[in-house]
Length: 442
Image 1 (cartoon, rainbow, N blue to C red):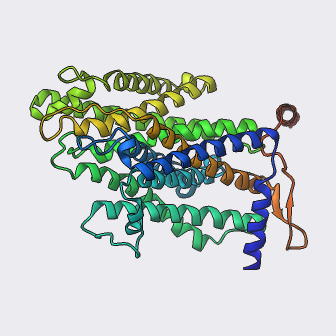
Image 2 (image 1 turned 90 degrees about the vertical axis):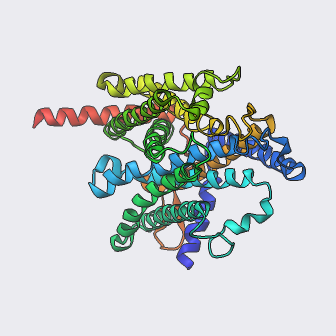
Image 3 (image 1 turned 30 degrees about the horizontal axis):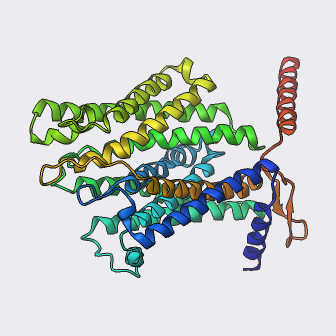
């Protein structure tokens, strides 16, 4: 217990040290979090009437973000499989960052669910073994269980690995390996069960499709890894953590395959509805071309589709995929495109038209958007703190002191100054040159 306390105490000290850029970033996130808390206090006082959700559209911006973020969390499996099943070294070195992102995404998921509750005082019913979950009849109970299981798995793996690395010892493979293997079906299950929440609603034909779960997984393996690549570029540029192009390119290649499957399944669903031309076409018609003069989502979904197809072409062609600038553009397009398609583009049409064949056009209110920004800021804050601890440990800049009790911190900046980044780049170029000369001499 003493070792655990010393490790925890060291991490607290580490998180309050950093460069001016680090303090500015953390301060910015904290300011957004305060805005989110104030907004939620207003919502608690006045109720969900401050949102634009009504009886006709009872799921809105909060559940849209929840659905999207479950996919971001599930995408960590795309790093776990090549890292720990095939033991591919370039990705194994960065797999932990994917698990940390999954932790942050699941926390945001739980916060968005809490924000969507009309009676948050009853949230305790969602806590396994404490609340009344109505398990196994309720799909919501299954979703709560798999989300919490996945969160606990990733937290355990990450903390245990970093704790052992901090004390300069190997992690026990007999303990780690089963957890890593279990995290693979757990990652798939969180998005599959989330898809079943929609899929099981027979009265909502827009969601009542057997390919919804595969679509969820395919889109998750696009948006999540795309977000990871953007983070990897930022981490590589602003910290001392090294990430190879080889690892990034392999993830980009996997995104290309996943995006093809995502677009194919979407096209198959569109064909089925339009070719059948039944009354169940109405929700998709509302989404793609408008219905009875109501077309609020039409420009958004076509923008998303253009973004997704453009990004697919970028990732499909090796020459464009290997250009880091174009690759970043492709990742941004995928992230935005899937966020629209799998968020508002999935949730809102399911309620159009309503059971009385009326159309209520939903758009998030300003209060909903402020609260959502606060939750995203909370997730990014958690991820920043996790990176602040993980990267120095993996670089060997934060470890137990020689006396075996205290801690030693060599990285007091985290975000490098411009001069330090230039030194690192020059040092890398010199090392590369020396390696090349050595090879020529040999």
